[in-house]
Structure formats: C-alpha cells, structure tokens
Length: 243
Figure 1 (cartoon, rainbow, N blue to C red):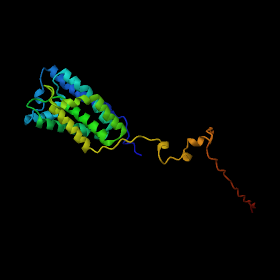
Figure 2: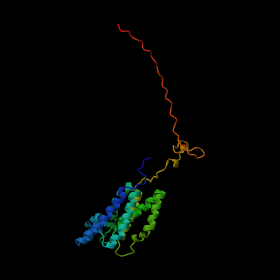
Figure 3: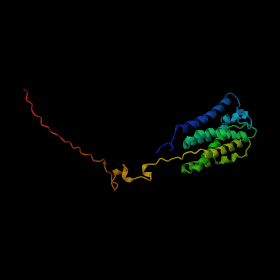
Figure 4: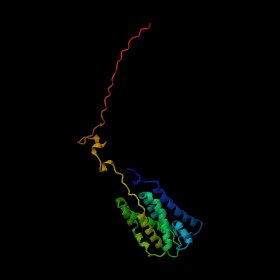
C-alpha cells in the first residue's frame, strides 16, 4: 500500500507556519521602523481601491496586541493543516484568504478591515468541519480540539464588540465551511502491520516460525540445504605410439 496518505511529518509543517509568522511580523516591524501606517492597504468594502486589501490585509495589524493574538493561532493552525491535510493545505490557505477577503469586501462596513483573523477563521472552520465530514477518529479528535481551543471564537462572527471586524470573521468561517465541502481530501490511512490485516496467516509469518507450539524459541528455521550430487564419468585414455 502506498504511504502517500499516511500521516507523516514534512518540512512544510515547520517552515510554512514559520514563514507566515515572520511575514506578518516583518510587515509590522516595517511600519514601526519607518513610522508609517499601512491600514489604507486593508480591505475597504465596495471600493475598487479597497480590493487590494484582499491580498494585503492579512499581513497588516493595528497593534502589538492585535499581532500577538493572531500569531499563535495562525502558526498552530497552519502547522495542523499541513500535517493532517498536506495535499490541500496550500489551496486552503490561498483560496481561503482570497474568498474570505472578497466576501468581507462585499459585506463589510465602511472601514479598513485588517489582520489575519479572517484567515484564522477559515482554518478553524475548515479543520473542524472537515474532521466531522470525514468521520475518521483522528480527524474528529482534531475537530474537538478546535472546539476546545477556539470554540469561544464563534461569538466574534457577530457584532458584539466595537473595533473588531466581525464581517471578516464571519466571511472566514463561511469560506472554511465551503472549502471543507468542496475539497475531497483523501482520508488518512493508518499504517498497519502485517498481523493487523484481515488476511493475516500465522503459519506464513517469518517471525513466528522461530517458535514452536509451546512458545519455545527455535534456534534456526533455515530450510535444509539440498545435497548436491556429483557424478564423475571416467574415460580411459588409450596410449598412442609414436612412429
């Protein structure tokens, strides 16, 4: 059986989250270093100029607190999606950021919408619903972990607090759900040993051949070496006389 669908660690699980986190912190450092404000590059709803925020807004944050609150969830969720859904992880990040940004641009209030929280909601929603749809116990366990760690985030898809882009959160949540339905991710296949398979035959197991019926170790189970029979054909040589 191919091991392509087995859960396995890859460099993307480490380096992609690191790259994403360094990107948003670098942009914030750039603002502080040169004393500039990039908020105008955020999403400005129903404005042609505001469409550029679909690409730039996830990298822009209004404060250190805002940046810090998004850093840990973004790193954790990105690592999780690249570990459990490696085949579709890149597409989820790209289309999640794109469509959640467009939906925010369409339904948002007249303001600059910035921050990576919309993408975080995409990842939480995708991981949660994908695990439920897959009905695989490991992925369901991951979904339950999403509820435990980020379940309180559900309230922020509603306008319950000033200064928070609930439209971006709602957009991310809906887009994550849609992507979980659209992407037909292959189920994780657990690596199984030969004795765990239904067609396992004890008599053919090379390891068990080293033990007798009482469990005693047999020093050698090598098959006997076939004897080689050598046949000689003697041919008498006649003397020749020289004349």
